[in-house]
Amino acid sequence: MRPAYNKGVALLTALLITALLATLAITLKWNNALDIRRTVVMLNRDQAIQVALGAESWIQNILRDDYEDDPDHDHLGEIWASELPPLPIDGGEIFGVIEDLQGRFNVNNLIDANGDIDQEAQKQFQNLLNALQLDPRFAGITADWIDADDQASFPDGAEDAIYTGFTPPYRAANQFLSNASELGAIEGMDKESFDILSPHIVALPRHTGINVNTATGPVLQSLSETMSVGDVESLFAAREGTGFTSLDIFDSYVEGALQEQLEESTSYFQLKLIVRIDTVRITYYSILERGPQGDVTPILRSLGTT
Image 1 (cartoon, rainbow, N blue to C red):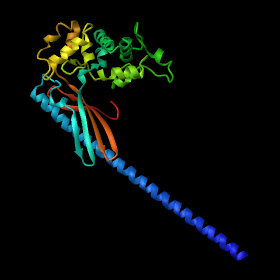
Image 2: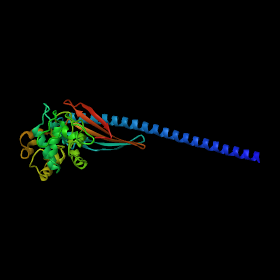
Image 3: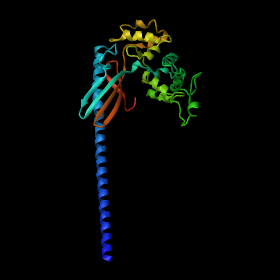
Image 4: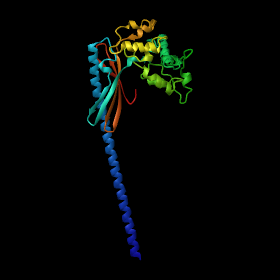
């Protein structure tokens, strides 16, 4: 019986080795397939970014040509304000939109050239918050978050003494914001409130006015404590197509220093592009600054964030 036993052991050993080799072969084949897939995804992602950069150059030319046609007016009837329809590219498509960022309230306006709180800008921000039915205290809290000192303003300020008590603790920025999303960290701000506020605010690198030809309804209301929704609808009707023919229409709505915020042209735009190649999809954001001679320069780029 011994030879038969040995043959059985040998057969089991052979089957085990065969099974191990088959498992190893399948594992190697699977890992090889994953490596190939990862490489394809990375190549498609790099290609999508290059496509986005090419589209960005095209948009720069559009904004430059728009300036040459009419340097003093930017409105929603111009070609740049139209959505970019889906355009076919090799293996996918690209589409997007350009937005006038000076149709929003620039939160960095809250601080003047000396690093102190600008009271008129804070009043305007309070008007915006009231129009959106949000807590007007956010105006003072935001100003305190940006201003240069670490002393809490009265009555609505909040500085390090508040933020270092949070879990996890952090400190106030005490400088200009690079992105308005930073306001999600101020005292009392919750996601619901920020989602309501974010379409109407922006953080730009210098003081800017409001382009009334492109401003959102609540931003127009921020220019006056008394402007109603009905007033905004009348203003929308007056600017439809070619923008306002004259800023005189605001004389009955806007008073004092806030009149200095009224503008009809824009220096800052945001380009949002969505590029899809195969299963890869990227969202590309670029903030474009148009200079006094019409030259257009990207000043901030990001993927997947605003």
